[in-house]
Amino acid sequence: MLSQQDIIAKGDKYVMRTYGRTPITLVRGKGVWVWDAEGKKYLDFVAGLAVNNLGHCHPRVVEAIARQAGTLIHCSNLYYIEPQVRLAEQLVNNSALDRVFFCNSGAEAVEAAIKLARKHAKKVSQDKSQIITALQSFHGRTLAAITATGQPKYQKGYEPLPAGFKHVPFNDFAAMEEALTDDVCAVLLEPVQGEGGVNVAEREYLQGVRHLCDERGALLILDEVQTGMGRTGRLFAYEHYGIEPDILALAKALAGGFPMGAMLAREEIARAFSPGDHASTFGGNPLACVAAIASLGVLLGEDYVKNAEVVGSYFRKRLADLIGRYHFVKEVRGLGLMLALELYIPGAGIVDRCRNKGLLVNCVKENVLRFVPPLIVSTEDVDAAMKILIEALDEEREALDSDGA
Ligand code: PLP
Image 1 (cartoon, rainbow, N blue to C red):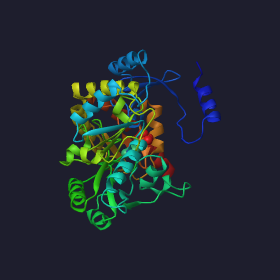
Image 2: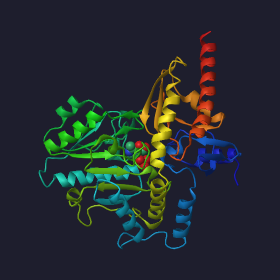
Image 3: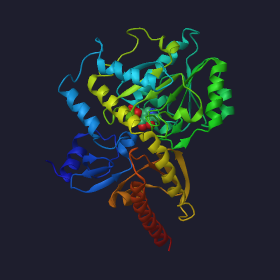
């Protein structure tokens, strides 16, 4: 086995430099814990970036993958695939949507949603092709997804970008009303913007946008790649808002850590796709589907969605106690177990201090600490994480004070 040092050296030499890496390598995981190559143990509140909702290596997911791997790993979508149809049925039965297209990532789910919305709109008018998205949104890294993403830093250098996207400020209904003209085929929003800083959509806003889309003949696409599969304390975040989307994008936690994405749509909209209109070689392959079936079974069977709500609310209160205690802590926000602590200072130093003490967290927007632990997390795990976080914040304050002195 390679040492941690060797893994880092080879990674720096051979892998393309698209990631700003933290200098550790994770080699094993169990439940809410992961271990690095030197045997150091960490409480994992990054969870593979909101992927490992059942923690690491849940026995039922492991067993399902192992059994399927010995039976049939892959077969083409030229044929019917039993685990795929079973998973599609379960997703339909547990959501407001009627049909599923399977793919392999969040960006692909968003791409599929954009294509379906445009294809559907062509039935009404050739000119109805614009998509409205929000500033500070994040929808993935393909060309259409970065164009949909309302953050110029993800687009810079990749021009020319695909046409037909406009951005409006998030939670600003008046701006949406102005932008939603006849040439708009869909509005694409995250119920909680994840990479954009954990910004929660207001209830009246999402309800208003839903109503406006109906009134003006546009579709509402919700990107629940990060918020879906129980993360916010509901299976899908739209359930908090008393609305239903026309199209839903899922990925991340869908298959318990195995790569998978899905785009779901209402029947009438799904009909815009005919055989040959869209496809994916690996989308909905047997291995990914059994992993997703097992994950969904555990998530619903053990009611970890409720746990996300209950433990999320406890965690949020504990984070809120930090306001006032540290002059550089600004605000707590989020939904369920998708939480954030906004700071007045950059968060990278605190992330490093936490990691050295055995807690993995990450930072979005440079000054927002994000907490997306597995949904199986207990209040005791949260207490353990808070103990480390407080130590890290104390050290940060001391360092700031001594710098200022
Ligand atoms: N949409 C949202 C809301 C996301 O948070 C992400 C990833 O962070 C994506 C899309 C892209 O997903 P992927 O990295 O699987 O392509």
